[in-house]
Length: 195
Image (cartoon, rainbow, N blue to C red; front, side, top):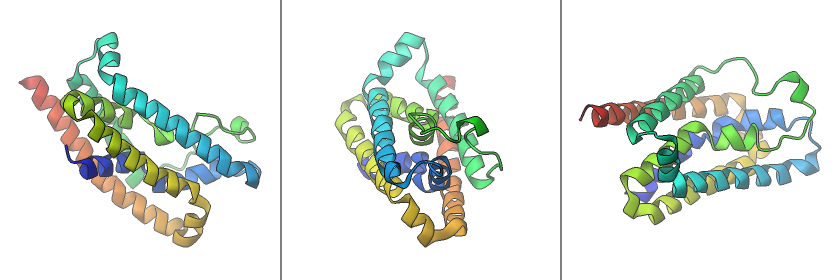
């Protein structure tokens, strides 16, 4: 397992640049001094969940009676939908109107924006395919998570530097790469099932 290639894949799935506008809109009504502590809390909650799925992924699969092929195909489909939405974003927001004044906790920032179903499925597959490379997987996850956390922590400044158009362009480019990863994930799942 190549740590940097795995970290890049995980980083693309986390999509921190694409999440900046959503983070800013969700935190829009939160006082300025509370925003950074909330972001720090949410990224650590997401990390805890991702580490849980990395270490206990095979046990979760066994408990639920799922095969790795089912997770690969399901994760590939969810990743494909996320990638398509990155390329062709919808106009609807992530939170309903009644939630707009509340301080977010776990949902939607930690889950599903950072630790969504596609990254959890990917983490399970990484450990299933390479159980001997668990420490490399942990390093790859920590690397991808660290870069994502830094980007989200400085989201306000990045938004001012890149602007709305710049972020959209980067997100669409990341979506194109993610579609290729999703297709490969689906192909691997189908070919493994057929075999």
